[in-house]
Amino acid sequence: MNTKRNSKEKLIKAMAVLLLEKGLANTSPNDILTRAEVGQGSLYHYFQGKEDLSLAAIKYNVEQLVNFNTLVLSSDKNAYDKLSDLLLKSRNIDRGCLVGQLARDRAIMENKGLAAEVNRGFESMKQTLESIIKVGISEGTISNILAPLEAVTIIMSTSQGAYIIAKGLQDDSYFYLAINTLLKIFTP
Image 1 (tube, one colour):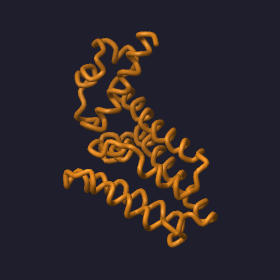
Image 2: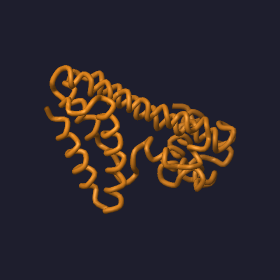
Image 3: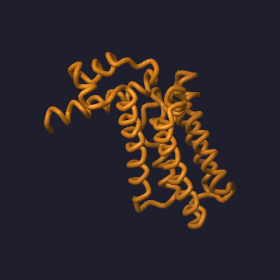
Image 4: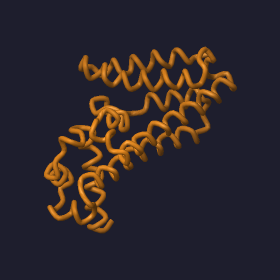
């Protein structure tokens, strides 16, 4: 990989993490350069400013989510196993959801361009879950106790809340307890 491309990717990845750790308003250009380990001129060489880099970083986070969703959907597993794979994937509980954490950031959500990208992440998750639930109900691997939209809403709410509970209690096991309890609801 050439150095120029490497510096741009380092900036995007550094900002993607900083947005989750510190938020948009609390991240300084110096924070970005230090985390990316690139020279001072790199930020403004590749991006018009912090907002432009933020958009690239949010897109990066959303693409990670979209790519994982696509991978899960394309597997040969039944719908319940796909739902389990989606909800029990390896994750950094302390950091929170790649997209959910961004939705909590007022500076991001007040910017139409940045908020639209966060919305794209949520829409991807909503569509993925809805597809899995519909297929699972029709194939009999997911309980039909809830309508698909009800199921999607409870899954997304529980998973986002599970991060907060685990952080608040300072114990990752509460995240997995919430997710495993949620999966029990969908067992036929």
